[in-house]
Amino acid sequence: MAIILIISTLINLQAQITIFLVLKIIYFGVLGGIIMGGVQTIFSVTGLWTYKSNEVVWSVFQLHKLAEYPLEIYNNFVRFLITCIFPFAFASYYPTLNYLGQSNLVYIAPIVAIVIWVIAIKIWNWGLNKYRSTGS
Image: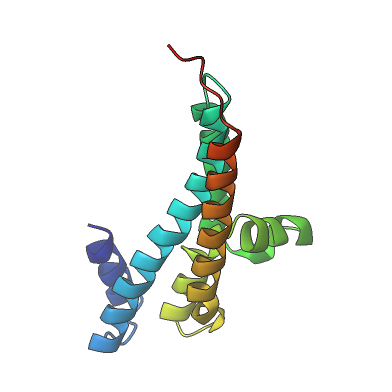
């Protein structure tokens, strides 16, 4: 459904749609999912120590809505937050700019995905090593 919406939007914007653009949309869509999954894994570790970790994960994921708008409307702290700390901008904002021919920053998204998953795996393993069950 998302691919159909993206393509129809590009048609309405009279962007030139090529097979290369369609492949980029699919590639960066999958890559965005990988980045979002890494962030979710990092904050899911709170579930090892809290009864209701959904609130923590939900709160962090509300930040992804900030990347749905042009980053220029935010101050430098928010830009840094959703680009470097919680790299949601690489899952939505930067790919969109690239589809419109306005930015090539999205091409470092594979590096961002690798880094976020290395961090996620290390934090997850740390959480598992520190976890102590009640035994019931």
